[in-house]
Image (cartoon, rainbow, N blue to C red; front, side, top):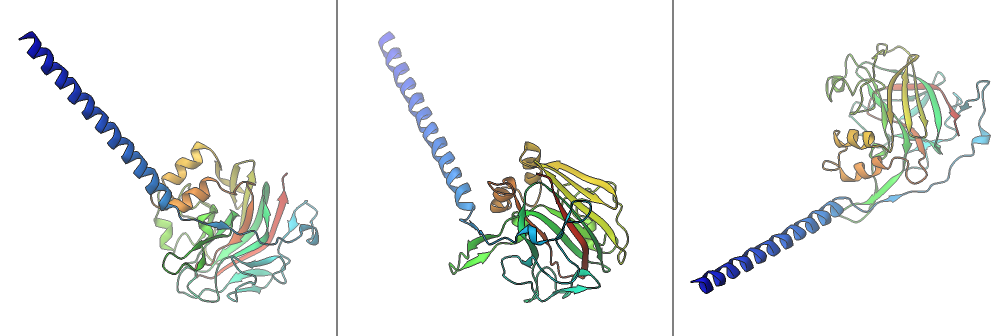
Length: 293
Protein backbone atom coordinates (compact mmCIF):
# COMPACT_ATOMS: atom_id res chain seq x y z
CA UNK A 1 0.00 0.00 0.00
CA UNK A 2 2.82 2.42 0.89
CA UNK A 3 4.55 1.66 -2.44
CA UNK A 4 1.29 2.27 -4.31
CA UNK A 5 0.65 5.56 -2.50
CA UNK A 6 4.22 6.65 -3.15
CA UNK A 7 3.84 5.87 -6.85
CA UNK A 8 0.59 7.80 -7.07
CA UNK A 9 2.15 10.77 -5.29
CA UNK A 10 5.04 10.84 -7.74
CA UNK A 11 2.65 10.73 -10.69
CA UNK A 12 0.55 13.55 -9.26
CA UNK A 13 3.65 15.66 -8.58
CA UNK A 14 4.90 15.13 -12.11
CA UNK A 15 1.52 16.13 -13.51
CA UNK A 16 1.49 19.31 -11.46
CA UNK A 17 5.00 20.21 -12.58
CA UNK A 18 4.11 19.56 -16.21
CA UNK A 19 0.98 21.69 -15.88
CA UNK A 20 2.95 24.51 -14.28
CA UNK A 21 5.56 24.30 -17.01
CA UNK A 22 2.87 24.37 -19.67
CA UNK A 23 1.19 27.35 -18.01
CA UNK A 24 4.47 29.23 -17.80
CA UNK A 25 5.14 28.59 -21.48
CA UNK A 26 1.66 29.80 -22.38
CA UNK A 27 2.15 32.93 -20.25
CA UNK A 28 5.52 33.58 -21.88
CA UNK A 29 4.01 33.07 -25.32
CA UNK A 30 1.15 35.43 -24.50
CA UNK A 31 3.60 38.07 -23.28
CA UNK A 32 5.65 37.67 -26.47
CA UNK A 33 2.53 37.99 -28.60
CA UNK A 34 1.43 41.07 -26.67
CA UNK A 35 4.83 42.68 -27.13
CA UNK A 36 4.77 41.88 -30.85
CA UNK A 37 1.24 43.27 -31.11
CA UNK A 38 2.25 46.50 -29.36
CA UNK A 39 5.29 46.92 -31.58
CA UNK A 40 3.35 46.22 -34.76
CA UNK A 41 0.66 48.72 -33.73
CA UNK A 42 3.19 51.56 -34.00
CA UNK A 43 4.06 52.02 -37.69
CA UNK A 44 7.53 52.87 -38.90
CA UNK A 45 7.97 56.62 -39.26
CA UNK A 46 10.53 59.24 -40.22
CA UNK A 47 11.04 62.64 -38.62
CA UNK A 48 11.97 64.94 -41.48
CA UNK A 49 15.02 67.16 -41.09
CA UNK A 50 14.20 70.17 -43.24
CA UNK A 51 16.24 73.39 -43.50
CA UNK A 52 15.62 76.00 -40.82
CA UNK A 53 15.64 79.77 -41.08
CA UNK A 54 18.43 81.82 -39.53
CA UNK A 55 17.04 83.75 -36.56
CA UNK A 56 19.69 86.44 -36.95
CA UNK A 57 17.75 87.63 -39.99
CA UNK A 58 14.78 88.58 -37.80
CA UNK A 59 14.33 91.72 -35.73
CA UNK A 60 14.77 91.59 -31.95
CA UNK A 61 12.54 94.06 -30.11
CA UNK A 62 13.33 96.18 -27.04
CA UNK A 63 12.10 93.40 -24.71
CA UNK A 64 14.52 90.84 -26.14
CA UNK A 65 11.91 88.96 -28.18
CA UNK A 66 12.54 87.85 -31.76
CA UNK A 67 9.70 89.09 -33.97
CA UNK A 68 8.87 86.03 -36.09
CA UNK A 69 5.99 87.64 -38.01
CA UNK A 70 6.65 91.04 -39.56
CA UNK A 71 3.00 91.91 -40.21
CA UNK A 72 3.60 92.19 -43.97
CA UNK A 73 4.46 88.79 -45.43
CA UNK A 74 5.21 85.16 -44.56
CA UNK A 75 9.00 85.46 -44.28
CA UNK A 76 10.17 82.45 -42.24
CA UNK A 77 6.85 80.60 -42.50
CA UNK A 78 5.72 77.65 -44.61
CA UNK A 79 3.11 74.95 -44.63
CA UNK A 80 3.56 71.90 -42.42
CA UNK A 81 5.20 69.29 -44.66
CA UNK A 82 5.38 71.83 -47.49
CA UNK A 83 7.80 74.33 -48.99
CA UNK A 84 5.19 77.08 -49.39
CA UNK A 85 2.43 78.71 -47.35
CA UNK A 86 -0.98 77.30 -48.40
CA UNK A 87 -3.18 79.85 -50.16
CA UNK A 88 -5.91 79.81 -47.53
CA UNK A 89 -3.49 81.67 -45.23
CA UNK A 90 -3.27 85.39 -46.02
CA UNK A 91 -2.12 88.67 -44.45
CA UNK A 92 -4.92 91.01 -43.37
CA UNK A 93 -4.40 94.30 -41.51
CA UNK A 94 -1.06 93.20 -40.08
CA UNK A 95 -2.31 89.77 -39.00
CA UNK A 96 -2.00 86.23 -40.29
CA UNK A 97 -5.48 85.07 -41.24
CA UNK A 98 -6.80 81.64 -42.09
CA UNK A 99 -9.74 81.96 -44.44
CA UNK A 100 -12.15 79.25 -43.43
CA UNK A 101 -13.57 76.85 -45.96
CA UNK A 102 -16.45 75.83 -43.71
CA UNK A 103 -15.58 72.23 -44.48
CA UNK A 104 -13.82 71.31 -41.25
CA UNK A 105 -10.21 70.61 -40.42
CA UNK A 106 -7.84 70.90 -43.42
CA UNK A 107 -10.64 69.96 -45.84
CA UNK A 108 -9.60 72.40 -48.54
CA UNK A 109 -6.81 71.46 -50.94
CA UNK A 110 -5.16 74.85 -50.54
CA UNK A 111 -5.23 74.72 -46.74
CA UNK A 112 -3.27 72.97 -44.01
CA UNK A 113 -1.35 73.97 -40.91
CA UNK A 114 1.58 76.41 -41.02
CA UNK A 115 4.83 76.47 -39.06
CA UNK A 116 7.63 78.93 -38.42
CA UNK A 117 10.63 77.18 -39.95
CA UNK A 118 12.89 77.08 -36.91
CA UNK A 119 12.96 74.61 -34.03
CA UNK A 120 12.83 76.13 -30.54
CA UNK A 121 13.87 74.41 -27.31
CA UNK A 122 13.49 76.66 -24.25
CA UNK A 123 11.43 79.69 -25.18
CA UNK A 124 8.56 82.03 -24.44
CA UNK A 125 6.05 82.60 -27.23
CA UNK A 126 3.67 85.57 -27.20
CA UNK A 127 0.92 86.37 -29.70
CA UNK A 128 -2.51 87.92 -30.10
CA UNK A 129 -5.47 86.01 -31.51
CA UNK A 130 -9.13 86.33 -32.36
CA UNK A 131 -11.75 84.06 -33.90
CA UNK A 132 -14.91 84.48 -35.91
CA UNK A 133 -18.19 83.16 -34.54
CA UNK A 134 -17.98 79.41 -33.95
CA UNK A 135 -14.31 79.16 -34.97
CA UNK A 136 -11.72 76.62 -33.86
CA UNK A 137 -7.92 76.61 -34.25
CA UNK A 138 -4.82 75.85 -32.22
CA UNK A 139 -1.22 76.75 -31.46
CA UNK A 140 1.30 73.91 -31.64
CA UNK A 141 4.77 73.81 -30.11
CA UNK A 142 7.72 71.39 -30.12
CA UNK A 143 6.23 70.01 -33.35
CA UNK A 144 8.02 67.56 -35.62
CA UNK A 145 7.31 66.84 -39.30
CA UNK A 146 6.47 63.14 -39.23
CA UNK A 147 6.17 60.95 -42.30
CA UNK A 148 4.88 57.37 -42.60
CA UNK A 149 3.98 55.15 -45.54
CA UNK A 150 0.41 54.56 -46.64
CA UNK A 151 -0.38 50.94 -45.69
CA UNK A 152 -2.44 50.45 -48.86
CA UNK A 153 -0.08 51.93 -51.46
CA UNK A 154 3.25 52.25 -49.67
CA UNK A 155 3.45 55.89 -50.74
CA UNK A 156 4.91 58.36 -48.22
CA UNK A 157 2.40 60.53 -46.39
CA UNK A 158 2.55 63.25 -43.75
CA UNK A 159 1.02 62.53 -40.37
CA UNK A 160 -0.95 65.42 -38.80
CA UNK A 161 1.06 67.95 -36.82
CA UNK A 162 -0.80 67.21 -33.56
CA UNK A 163 0.55 63.66 -33.54
CA UNK A 164 3.84 65.06 -32.21
CA UNK A 165 2.98 68.47 -30.74
CA UNK A 166 1.06 69.64 -27.67
CA UNK A 167 -1.72 72.05 -28.61
CA UNK A 168 -2.85 75.25 -26.93
CA UNK A 169 -6.48 75.38 -28.00
CA UNK A 170 -7.91 78.43 -29.78
CA UNK A 171 -11.72 78.49 -29.70
CA UNK A 172 -14.94 80.46 -29.63
CA UNK A 173 -16.00 78.97 -26.30
CA UNK A 174 -19.57 80.20 -26.57
CA UNK A 175 -20.44 78.91 -30.02
CA UNK A 176 -18.21 75.97 -30.98
CA UNK A 177 -19.41 72.50 -29.82
CA UNK A 178 -15.87 71.44 -28.87
CA UNK A 179 -16.15 73.71 -25.82
CA UNK A 180 -18.65 71.28 -24.29
CA UNK A 181 -16.71 68.14 -25.20
CA UNK A 182 -13.67 66.56 -23.56
CA UNK A 183 -13.51 66.65 -19.76
CA UNK A 184 -13.80 69.57 -17.33
CA UNK A 185 -13.65 72.12 -20.17
CA UNK A 186 -10.24 70.88 -21.36
CA UNK A 187 -11.05 71.81 -24.95
CA UNK A 188 -11.71 75.49 -24.33
CA UNK A 189 -9.34 78.27 -25.35
CA UNK A 190 -5.69 78.05 -24.24
CA UNK A 191 -6.32 74.67 -22.58
CA UNK A 192 -3.78 71.94 -23.20
CA UNK A 193 -6.09 70.31 -25.70
CA UNK A 194 -7.98 67.29 -24.35
CA UNK A 195 -5.76 67.12 -21.26
CA UNK A 196 -5.72 70.18 -18.95
CA UNK A 197 -8.39 72.92 -18.85
CA UNK A 198 -7.35 76.58 -18.82
CA UNK A 199 -8.16 78.03 -15.38
CA UNK A 200 -9.33 80.72 -15.11
CA UNK A 201 -11.12 80.60 -18.45
CA UNK A 202 -10.86 84.27 -19.34
CA UNK A 203 -11.17 84.32 -23.14
CA UNK A 204 -12.95 87.25 -24.75
CA UNK A 205 -15.93 86.75 -27.08
CA UNK A 206 -15.47 86.06 -30.79
CA UNK A 207 -14.41 89.09 -32.81
CA UNK A 208 -12.28 90.52 -29.97
CA UNK A 209 -8.50 90.29 -29.69
CA UNK A 210 -6.99 88.13 -26.93
CA UNK A 211 -3.39 87.79 -25.81
CA UNK A 212 -1.90 84.32 -25.60
CA UNK A 213 1.40 82.74 -24.72
CA UNK A 214 3.31 79.51 -24.22
CA UNK A 215 6.47 79.15 -22.13
CA UNK A 216 8.62 76.01 -22.35
CA UNK A 217 11.64 75.75 -20.07
CA UNK A 218 13.42 72.47 -19.32
CA UNK A 219 10.17 70.54 -19.40
CA UNK A 220 7.98 73.02 -17.53
CA UNK A 221 5.19 74.36 -19.75
CA UNK A 222 2.91 77.32 -18.99
CA UNK A 223 0.01 78.60 -21.11
CA UNK A 224 -1.02 82.25 -20.72
CA UNK A 225 -4.25 83.98 -21.70
CA UNK A 226 -5.12 87.65 -21.33
CA UNK A 227 -2.41 88.29 -18.76
CA UNK A 228 -2.93 85.22 -16.56
CA UNK A 229 -1.22 81.84 -16.30
CA UNK A 230 -3.97 79.33 -17.06
CA UNK A 231 -2.15 75.98 -17.51
CA UNK A 232 1.03 74.49 -16.07
CA UNK A 233 2.42 70.99 -16.55
CA UNK A 234 5.72 69.16 -16.90
CA UNK A 235 6.91 67.26 -19.97
CA UNK A 236 8.86 64.00 -19.83
CA UNK A 237 7.50 63.06 -16.40
CA UNK A 238 5.08 60.44 -15.11
CA UNK A 239 2.48 63.22 -14.94
CA UNK A 240 2.88 63.80 -18.69
CA UNK A 241 2.61 60.09 -19.48
CA UNK A 242 -0.51 59.81 -17.33
CA UNK A 243 -2.08 62.79 -19.10
CA UNK A 244 -1.48 61.15 -22.46
CA UNK A 245 -2.86 57.81 -21.30
CA UNK A 246 -6.09 59.51 -20.18
CA UNK A 247 -6.51 61.35 -23.50
CA UNK A 248 -7.32 60.57 -27.14
CA UNK A 249 -3.53 60.15 -27.59
CA UNK A 250 -3.22 57.11 -25.29
CA UNK A 251 -1.04 54.13 -26.18
CA UNK A 252 -4.15 52.03 -26.73
CA UNK A 253 -6.07 54.54 -28.86
CA UNK A 254 -3.21 56.01 -30.91
CA UNK A 255 0.14 54.24 -30.41
CA UNK A 256 2.16 56.44 -32.77
CA UNK A 257 0.88 59.68 -31.24
CA UNK A 258 1.58 58.33 -27.76
CA UNK A 259 5.16 57.42 -28.66
CA UNK A 260 5.89 60.78 -30.27
CA UNK A 261 4.18 62.92 -27.64
CA UNK A 262 5.63 60.98 -24.73
CA UNK A 263 9.03 61.85 -26.18
CA UNK A 264 7.89 65.34 -27.15
CA UNK A 265 10.54 67.30 -29.04
CA UNK A 266 12.55 64.18 -29.88
CA UNK A 267 16.14 63.60 -28.79
CA UNK A 268 16.97 67.32 -28.84
CA UNK A 269 13.70 68.28 -27.07
CA UNK A 270 12.97 71.03 -29.58
CA UNK A 271 10.44 71.65 -32.32
CA UNK A 272 8.41 74.01 -34.48
CA UNK A 273 5.74 76.53 -33.52
CA UNK A 274 2.65 76.15 -35.67
CA UNK A 275 -0.89 77.41 -36.26
CA UNK A 276 -3.80 75.17 -37.13
CA UNK A 277 -6.14 75.08 -40.08
CA UNK A 278 -9.37 73.79 -38.54
CA UNK A 279 -11.50 75.08 -41.40
CA UNK A 280 -12.57 78.29 -39.62
CA UNK A 281 -11.66 81.97 -39.79
CA UNK A 282 -8.93 82.86 -37.28
CA UNK A 283 -6.36 85.66 -36.94
CA UNK A 284 -2.90 85.88 -35.29
CA UNK A 285 -0.66 88.92 -34.91
CA UNK A 286 2.25 90.38 -32.88
CA UNK A 287 3.95 86.99 -32.79
CA UNK A 288 7.29 87.00 -31.00
CA UNK A 289 9.60 84.53 -29.24
CA UNK A 290 12.19 84.97 -26.51
CA UNK A 291 14.95 82.33 -26.31
CA UNK A 292 15.39 81.13 -22.71
CA UNK A 293 18.53 78.97 -23.12
